[in-house]
Length: 214
Ligand code: AMP
Image: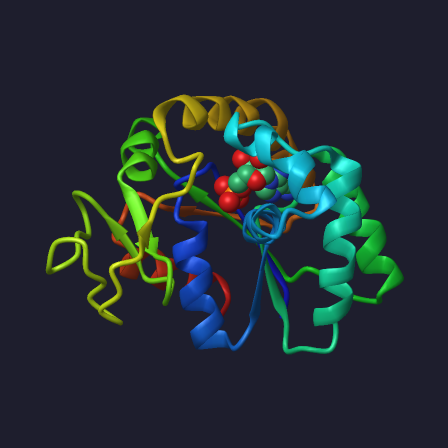
């Protein structure tokens, strides 16, 4: 089973992907995570991507399409994958269709997490995670039990994304509205799109996703 999770930054794509991965035994392919790893390793792609990501702008389509192709190829034999953060433009959506056709794969569900835009900035600006085990937290909604110590692994290495600030987030929302939202009708026309209310608790959002995938 393969699916695409769509929605603005802060909609909960990463949180829901983590749950889907565990319950449905799928692999998460997050273009944001892959790019952050490229930045960390200072690869050629990472060097190009860094300032665009910090500014909340999209990385050029050709670079993203080349990057994702290998990841999809690698996961083609697995029990399925979740695309998180891809496609983000019409060109990427069309390139994905070509890739899937070539690899004899198909997308079973396209799920859009719908979230009130006002909630997004607060969600994103307050979030942080454990740099060691990856557990996610939020200053207001999900703080650590002990100040600056991960509840799960006890690490003090708590990290925030460089682009989780008001300025970058404002630009990321513009990019979402202008470049990503226009691909929704593309999937709607194919009859593949389901909209899920992302304003509920993570558990309730996941329950809605389970209904879609049943
Ligand atoms: P995310 O972790 O999905 O919020 O992505 C973080 C940043 O990585 C975005 O703001 C973009 O700069 C870049 N990025 C991630 N996925 C894509 C994509 N599919 N196309 C272009 N840029 C992307």
